[in-house]
Amino acid sequence: MRTRSKDTECYFCVGIYGPGHNCPAKGKTCSKCRKLNQFTKVCCSKVMNAIKNDKQSQIAETFEEDEILLYDVQQNGSKDEVFVSLNINNQTRVSFKINTRAQ
Image (cartoon, rainbow, N blue to C red; front, side):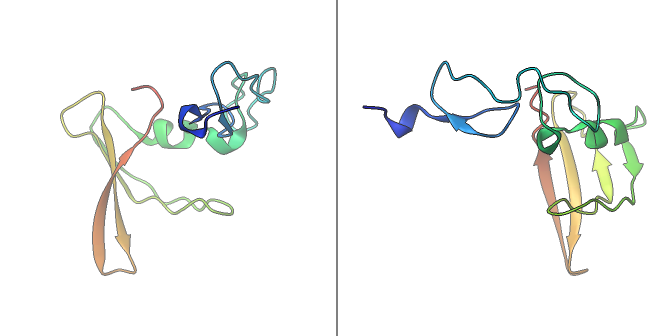
């Protein structure tokens, strides 16, 4: 009997699997960044390419489907953490920590 508590989200295909699963993204190429063994839906190349060494960059890019419009990317002193600030309905500014899958 398989226990759901050991299941985790796969970084390469975002499927939920137990330990030792065979990822369906294995051998596939991302159509956004051309990296091997990942699906396009998990690609973070657009976010990572937007971060410049000057610690802040302004972005205005429209994405498809369930992706969002990204305005402001900041690296707040730490090389390991990246945050995005979003204005929601032009009323509330919320800061989100980006999961770069490299931490």
